[in-house]
Image (cartoon, rainbow, N blue to C red; front, side):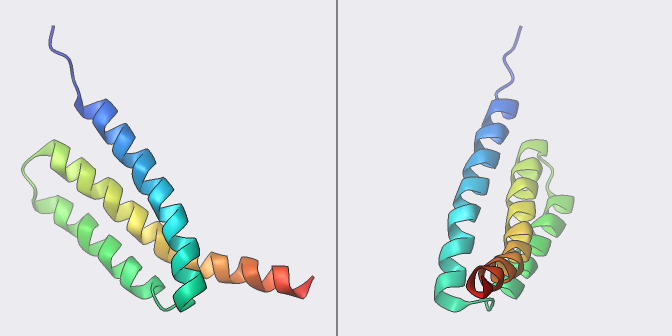
Length: 90
């Protein structure tokens, strides 16, 4: 029986990228407001598009996880702005 390390490796990469993205969104918004949102969205789409040309399933999956995380971080910067506006109104 051969052990498959791809699943645990991708799981760890996913958790790490989400945690890093959570911190990154808050820090980028605090320093640059919503300006980094569009570059993050574009980086995410580029990474996701890049997965289409990779021969290795592992690297395609890893790049896909990073791409979705970057894309979602771009969306979250706009959501962070709305959260901060609600917080300052109360």
